[in-house]
Length: 218
Image (cartoon, one colour):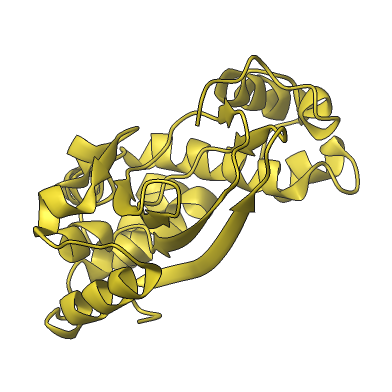
């Protein structure tokens, strides 16, 4: 399963606690206890804030580049969308164990080499760019962009931007934002601030302090 899945987590939400979700270029499968249904969360290009509710969810994050094979649809259609899993697989999922079973069954019939070039590019693009990734994978830049966009849902350049902000959000500013900017490959701290604010709606410092924009219902 590790070929297809990058992370499996159980997340708990509390009442009266604002929840902040950063951007994520990956697609995820989620079972929510509140609705007792599984959903597909497409690549998320912006941060989202919502009022907490008493609920928990199982989140299965697919490796970028693998979602098309796992879901059986082009991921461009799923960007910033939340779609019931039953609409894609026709499978009724009423418990977390049902989601795990459905996913395991689906993966058992897939070739792990499917979209392997895109999966490798997803690792390379944030650090070496499209040209560098295409060179290392011995494909043309144009071909890589086409493959990448269809499989991941985002063009390579946008994918790299979203992934950088995702990682910046995850750091919480530990060690200072200048250090974070350097480690994540930003030109300078102002570049980090600009991308962070455009994506999350607030500057990095305000986000780290919990000063979020207006929330919406979960």
